[in-house]
Length: 39
Image 1 (cartoon, rainbow, N blue to C red):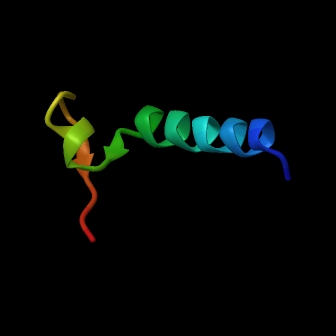
Image 2 (tube, rainbow, N blue to C red):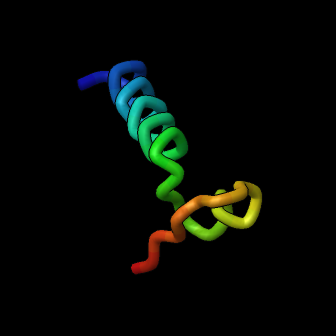
Image 3 (cartoon, rainbow, N blue to C red):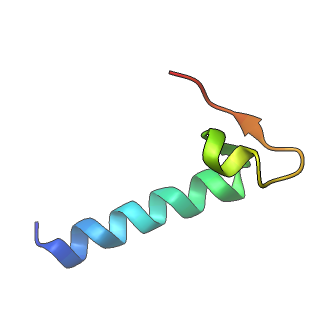
């Protein structure tokens, strides 16, 4: 796997999380109605 493919997979994962509104604190505090993920 090259850097470009790895970056594309990261972006795809982030888009999925943001679209599902299930995010970590840094994004949750900026989004209305988002679900906060915790470790």
